[in-house]
Image (cartoon, rainbow, N blue to C red):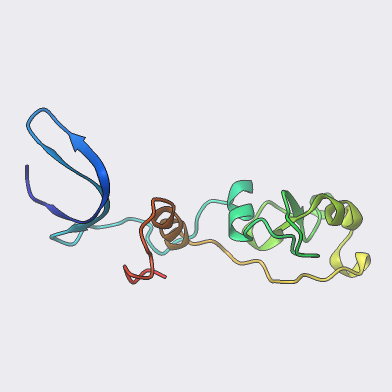
Length: 139
């Protein structure tokens, strides 16, 4: 092999096999040389799943488990599917707010929405395979 990377941490008991070799299943890989990562500092594309994960499935109004997306500026009034205009909401609160603005509904947000960066998605992906983003200096 070309020896371009070193396995820093591997999953015990799992291996990857090729025609010529076998090596531990990597959890963390460190490249020997700098690798260009395009769009590293941009923001991730908006998605329903992304909003739910960003908000940890917690309703922005009451704190209950939320599985719906609410638009701060309702779509009926020109609100778009954007990170700063969408929050996670439980069905009860989403129905209560309906197609009104926050001021009209008298509801307040428990937290402010934020734009999800590509770095955020990378940290979540690393954590999802069991590696510690803090130990890697990413969180």
